[in-house]
Length: 154
Image 1 (cartoon, helix red, strand yellow):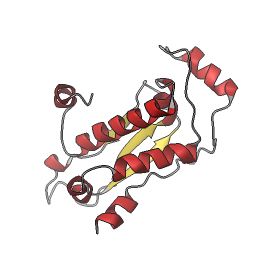
Image 2 (cartoon, one colour):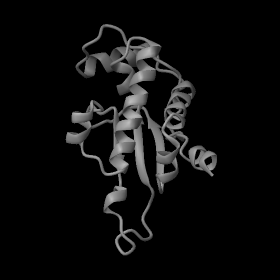
Image 3 (cartoon, one colour):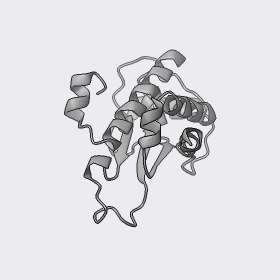
Image 4 (tube, helix red, strand yellow):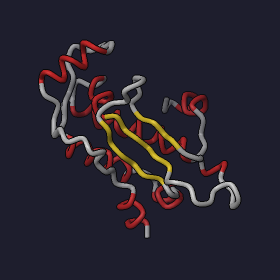
């Protein structure tokens, strides 16, 4: 059962097809948004999705089985704000039989370019993906940004 749930939580493609960012796109990213690092570590979409899947697989089994009606996806960037990840939906703590019927799945989105823009090594990308997955999954369980900050996951 846990394997089925974990498999259903694997990220899906957002329809955008760049396997990797071109040098031109990396320069554009650094030029259009503030960057505090001189280098950006870039990974292919396929490899990034595997990192996300690995981060989901590393969650404690009890959390994986408790996650309900949530899709995890990867997109290039957040467009409007500089976000590494975003949870959209109704947290488990706010769901009720009358208030949670016939709704679309919650969404956890990880923004690949934003995550890579704050990393200069693959090790940093892996750690940032893990932290972002934990952060957004925590929102699915109703944990606030303030509490995540107190716990060191902000």
